[in-house]
Length: 169
Image 1 (cartoon, rainbow, N blue to C red):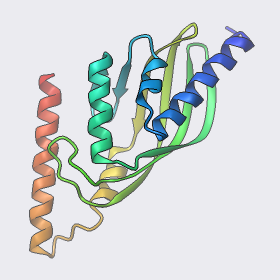
Image 2: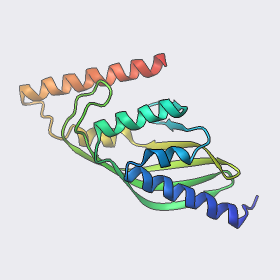
Image 3: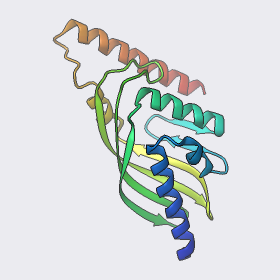
């Protein structure tokens, strides 16, 4: 199936604006790119469906990583999607659910599938290697220092609580 060039251009424009508005924290504009906001974060199994749930996701993720930003690397078109590869960067300065802040930065290469029905964005599905991010966020934890062990315990406990809450949702 060949996609109409006008439709491809409209989808690409929407995705580029969506990503730029995420960087400037203009979440009203980001939400306006969806008729019904829906995110799927594949490595964690988290699904955020509906305006209030997605707004909460934005609030929690930017509390944890207030300087979070993306850098577009490539963009491709599929019959029903725009697929992007990008760097996501940020510094863990606030709690991420039950995980306390580490103060460390991360840089992770990601892919996102922006799924469309014609010209309507219906889902952003994000893929990344969670271990790469976790390794960077835990970079300062040393098993030789008792204080680091306590930090590691708190982080692992927080990760476990976050996963249990996702499983119950």
